[in-house]
Length: 112
Image (cartoon, rainbow, N blue to C red; front, top):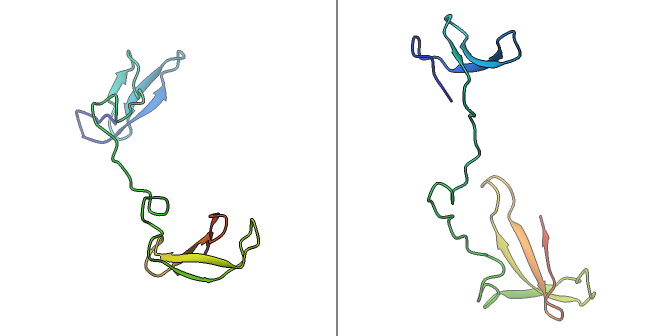
């Protein structure tokens, strides 16, 4: 975002009447002609930064170790037993989400 050098307000893009665009201030008569391309999309990699590595909560090694099982029908194979875990994935005033993994076919699904 560019700012007005006179009054420090944000500049907006407007048309100048001859088919070209310009930056103009809303509060004072300052105008800046656009002579170069602005707003080139830059990624973290192009700026020399690395993306943060995110752990896979449900698929990581050992994520399903030491979890309880319950009677829950699998939507894929209809087996009646599944492992489950509850995780708070939304704000604290929302209910927890329950994740299931079929004991027989390892299909995973979520409720809530």
